[in-house]
Image (cartoon, rainbow, N blue to C red):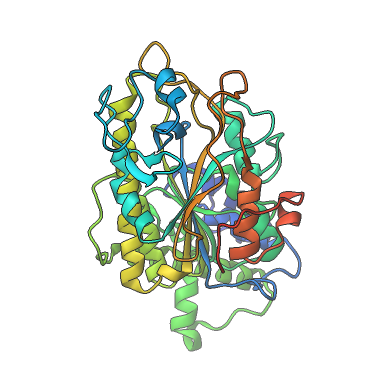
Length: 434
């Protein structure tokens, strides 16, 4: 693709090349796509929300990619069938000897015989402080055991896995034309389907240092916004509603957003974060929250949960990294004075089969726990643990539809019409107190 530096930069030309530019490399901000999409919708520019939508409420989504083993995360040590199905993988109950290298569970509920994986000590601390809600047996009807198909179902909140993402539809329904950098931010190599709406597109970047506006390198006209503002008398103001005015506003929004995000992330955090990728992602999100950006939704991802072989060590390690990152993130928000504003949702596309396989691992399953974190959650264990004897082809039967959890987040926290966004009514569990 070539660009003529002397060519007039019209609205049509910007739209023609803007999306292509955004997909050329990770160093081109993905918000160009969202800017163009929003500006194509008549009457949406400058709108931030509908009446009643709380602009100070933030949602952070943490995706556990690969299919987290729910049975070795929230451990049903009170069920003898658990140990029969997993002689080499089962986590022992409190007060008993460890077996198979999986350790001894951290006590959650002695009566129901439930504990947390011993590598989740940091999460257990948050749970004891009343900041965690554990929702048991979450899934959906006719479960799909394919990573890609199941993730599409979770991302779209549709059983066919088609259409826009559920977060994208939230923005389409409540925040048409949200200005940069408000809206949603995905911290990673690519933005997930969950964040893609018909109008709204997320900002996406893997490294804040690479997140910079390159417009002035693409065309000299894109250097002008700062010149026009800083030397308005000398350069002159563009005519309102002109193509030049459109271009300048777009470029200025993009440039200011890029500069502000990088400046926010460059600041020293208020707490010490662990040295892991998921901790780095959450640290970036916390830095942007601290800076006061208008972003409503942040999305981060921790992979590695596809534990088909030699599960105990690998699974325990990634659980520990995730829990310690969540602990640091919570403590950072608290130090900022932003803890009350941020709800964190943790999910995986499916759980694992009840029985271990021949490689001391577990294969793709169905239902698994979800987690919500923040002062606004109803703390404790929600729902009953799935039966280990009444199974669906060797897999757990779900007791809570994941869309009902989404409905609770949308209705109770984001104050958005969940039925319209999710395409149906789902009775939300009592997981959020506000």
